[in-house]
Length: 86
Image (cartoon, rainbow, N blue to C red; front, side, top):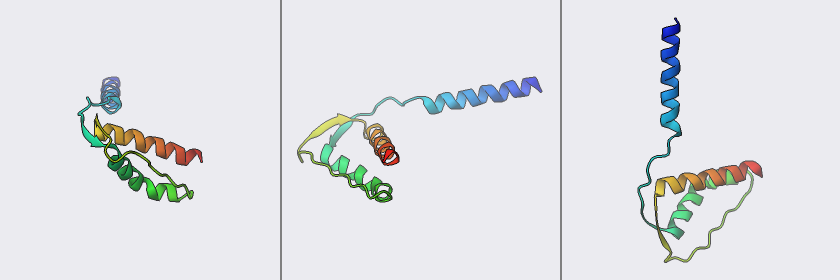
């Protein structure tokens, strides 16, 4: 029983470690204005629940090198936390 439980605990820890690791960034060129608008569109339903409005003002030509998936997750988390705080 102890051997089986210790195996289960090790498997749980291994799975947790995989989940908590941030993958290495895969940068690509992003148009900041379009990228932010996509995230705001994605979050509109959540923000509408509390009648929140999010506007983005960025120069159309602004581009950056960034990992779109990682930055998108950060922005989603920030907006979600903001909605919950309001």
